[in-house]
Image 1 (tube, rainbow, N blue to C red):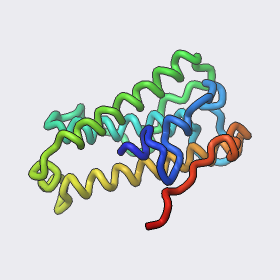
Image 2 (cartoon, rainbow, N blue to C red):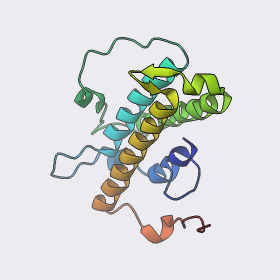
Image 3 (tube, rainbow, N blue to C red):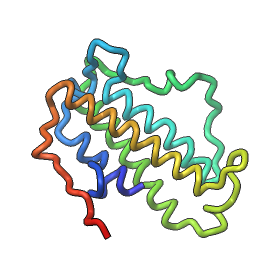
Image 4 (cartoon, rainbow, N blue to C red):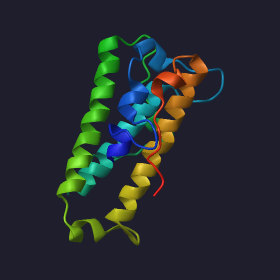
Length: 160
């Protein structure tokens, strides 16, 4: 959770991936069917929040849409304040996840949550999902020219 949120590690964390982006850049889409950065942020907020609520024993509101409906909220004319709110929401959810995982005991993490999957497995899938969309965000920044690799380089931990 920390590596995908704000901890420098083998890849750029979300805080750095979104750093310095304007609302206009966040809403930008190329000519393909790729989602905007803003859409990816809202998608991640949606799913991370729902799973976090379930982890906390809270039943989220019923969701009747499909996954595509979670890539909502792109604001082509959205304000910088709207964009900041979208980022803040994601970072708050990520922070709550880090706290929830660090405070959970073994019995909670090994408990079966969905099908035959323990919370350990579900959290692993959430982290993978977050990393996937983090990669899409960085790719979109590269396409739009708002990503300078030398400024954002992170070195991998030394091999052991």
